[in-house]
Length: 136
Image (cartoon, rainbow, N blue to C red; front, side, top):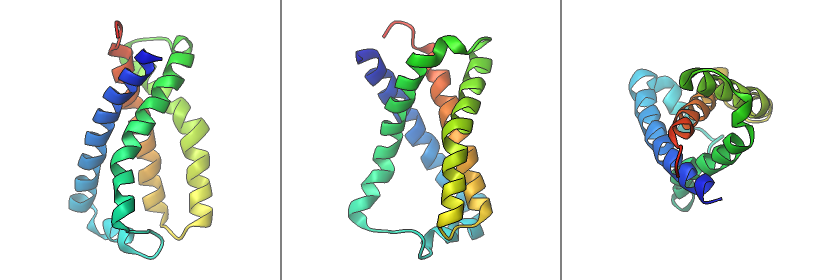
C-alpha cells in the first residue's frame, strides 16, 4: 500500500505539471478552444478550483493501484509497456467517459478529443514513472 501511495503521489506531481503545461499550451496554441472553458457548460467557483490541483494526485494514486494490479500483463520495453497501459486506460475508461460527456454536456468535439488525448497522456506518463519505481 505504501508503494502505491508513494508512486501515486510522485506520478500526481508529474501529472500536475503536465496539466499546467497543457493548460498554457492550449491557451497559446488554441485560444478559440480555450474560450469554451468560459462558457455556461463549466462552473467557475473559487472554492471548487482547488479540485483542479487535487485531481492529478487522485489520478496518480488510482493509476498506481491499477498499475500494480496489471503490470505483469504489459510486455516489452519501458516505453512499450507504458504505451500499452495508456491505450488500455484510454479504451476502458477515457473513451467511454468522453462519449458520455459529449452526449450530455454542451462542449465541442475538439475539446472532448483533447481530453481524450490528455487521458491517454496521463496514463502513459504515469506508467513511465511506475516502470521506474523498483524499490519504493
